[in-house]
Amino acid sequence: MLLYSRLSDVLSKEALFYAVILPFLAFFGAFGFVLYPLSDAIHPSALADRLLAALGPSFLGPVAILRIWSFCLFYVMAELWGSVVISVLFWGFANQITTVEEAKEFYPLFGLGANIALIFSGRTVKYFSNMRKNLGPGVDGWAISLKGMMSIVVLLGLVITGIYWGVNKFVLNDPSLPRSDRKKKKEKPKLGMKESLKVLVSSRYVRDLATLVVAYGISINLVEVTWKSKLKAQFPSPNEYSSFMGDFSTATGIATFTMMLLGRVILRKFGWGVAAMITPTVLLLTGVGFFSLLLFGEPLAPVLGRLGITPLLAAVYVGALQNIFSKSAKYSLFDPCKEMAYIPLDEDMKVKGKAAIDVVCNPLGKSGGALIQQFMILTFGSLANSTPYLGGILLVIVLAWLGAAKSLDSQFSPLAKQELEKEKKRRKTFEPVVDVDVKGKQNGPIVEPVSTEKSSNGPALERNLAPESESSTETTTPSTQ
Image (cartoon, rainbow, N blue to C red; front, side):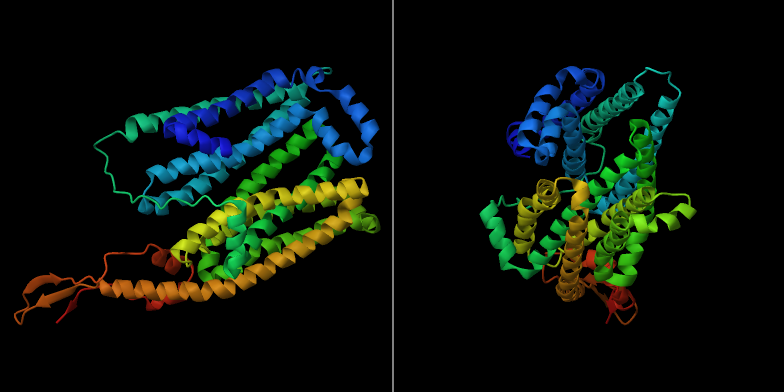
């Protein structure tokens, strides 16, 4: 992100887009056609063996990263694709060219479209996994599948750049299209670590919001890494593993698509507090089942055997359900609730609080789970030996998450009601008065605005947070004298 910030100072927006996305496409293409075929030659296996013998099994993880560095780099680039290309480039461009009114109509469609794409990507992975089954002995089926999938990635990436170029060339420069004056956004303050911590300490509201962000990041990391270790044990061959992950991606897309349709209904009917607690509740309930199967799988083996599954396979299925439902709840409820929580804050705290959470909490949430697992591996020797302790840590974090959500709801709801009252008063201020004479002839509206400032927070709050007030909302109509 530091490199991105520096590039943004010297490049135009269009050049910055190409400068960021093209290296990703070049790497993915190179990995499929160069790095993976040469992996045996470029991986320092002998050096890794010597380091492991000298350092001991506690350093198995760091040494493994060195041993298969190109695979780890691929994983990092794949993770960065979602953070950089989707979050920064796509949404940055969408925010740049979309008005607020257009965003209300099209942004939900963008989210639904992304999850439809997830369904098709899962089917694509499944297709290439099945294709490897029909290859003859001695053929590296994974290399063939990787070339096919990376070719699709590069091709679709070039389609993205082509669409971006076309929009800038023919759409944004078309004088016949209607344009709206966009107010210049207030520049987001660049808070350092020290200033960010001061903001977090000074406000209970922001601390609770920060707890939600950190708790989600740590929880999902603890669960996902532990689950994938069991998934690899159940499906040791790349063919079976990728086939299962294809089905997993498809199921995640379908569940998220459905939850996004239900999310608005949940917010309207049950309010912010219930919606904010659904994600940690799902993680808690499915986490109990997942870690219970890992810890008490042997006593349950006879019962599970009657169902035709082993304790490991049952843990894999329950872990998959946990990841599917927690991620779908995150995209459909947690993210909207988190963004809505900023709305009632005053402008200064809204900007500084979000900046502080971006600086401290987002990185802490993403890396916190990994740091906990590395500490456990170094202490107990392996991830399997650490499982009971990871389950206990997950329980504590999710309970803290639920407590923070409840505390934040107690602060958010009164502020939201105050914001609604302010919006109603603003509407009354703009209510036109129509002068009608005794003959019924309308002489025209007489409007006496007291303020020219209009908030955009009120309607969003009224639409999402206070459904019970809809029946009593006053509609602005001309009043006659």
